Amino acid sequence: MNITIITTGGTIAKTFDELDGKLHNEQPVIEQIVEGMRLPDLTITYRHVLSKDSLEFTDADRELVLENVRSAMPDCDAMVISHGTDTLEQTGELLCREVGDPRIPILLTGAMRPFEFRDTDAIQNLTETLLACRLVSPGVYVVMHNRVLAFPGVIKDRVALTFVRTA
Image (tube, rainbow, N blue to C red):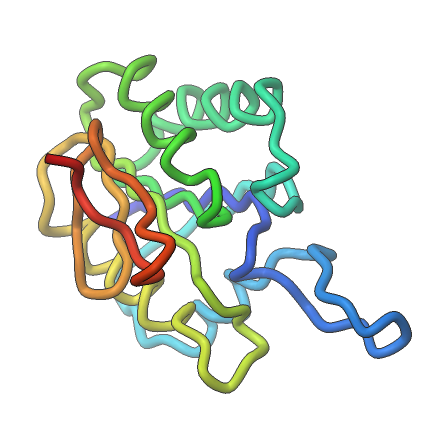
């Protein structure tokens, strides 16, 4: 199975800077996470598109993600987009609207806690997303916290710190 992973930054990729005591998006960590997994029959291609907190995303950034999705789609069986959780729903809705009926699953994921943190949810979310690539029908989804939710109509529950479907 051929999977393209598009990275955009977000909490999953944040690293702690000891000098200023802050978290920053410096470089993607997805390849590091995948290296620790046993995935004998996957071929993964990476596209490092952005390295931003999703709160800083502009319309142009979302268009760049859309452009990369469209250009990568012919060459893969599924696509994973690592994305910051704060505006993931906006990107998911855009992809759902603009891509229409994709021929492959397009799965967005991220983390509420950085990969560097001991209590991270990054490994769980990426593992579930890679499995979901094999199991879901073509469409646009968010995969996090043991849930696979199809767009449109997915929102971040800022109290429960996960994603849910609207009514």
